[in-house]
Image (cartoon, rainbow, N blue to C red; front, side, top):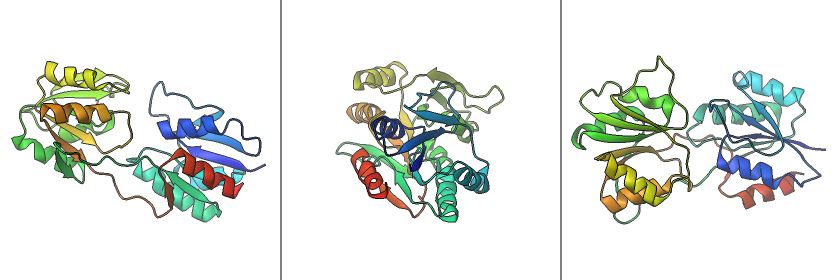
Length: 246
């Protein structure tokens, strides 16, 4: 029986694992990086932790007898995606990237597209004093030097005790969020601008709509380059790919 390894940690990966529960012709395992303290576990077999780079992943693929690999990690998990592409090539395995479509600006949006965190920080000079950071806990250090700004920092898990942080308040929340929730949050904390990654999907799209309604600018960090592997954006397309390879 073919064995599939899903590199997960996203809603797309969880939905894929659930859809494959009744596939008797395929054995499925999902791997999570282990960065979230209380992750939403997908259905079926799950492993948690890193692989040790490309060499470690190649060794795992061979040792576990993996036949197919689907990279359904976060669009900003550039390193693991690159490692997966290289490992699949070395091991001679078919690989598919399942990645949610990126957001695109709508009429009324005030987006400032930037390539990285450092550029995002520079863009805040003329965007007000109170900034909403929705970039996760691992990238907060990029804004820690801006001591003349106040930041509302939303994340699922708290940052490490020794992590350099901007001035402001930490808000621990797990989406999805409603437009009403996001609008209320922006008004209550008197937010002047938002910094977001272009993660795509529907989980925090409400934030974008609330910002549009309130006329707030969004500094949008665009996605890093992706490996040159076959890519799909829907669960149906991923399932069709698997049917062709099983």
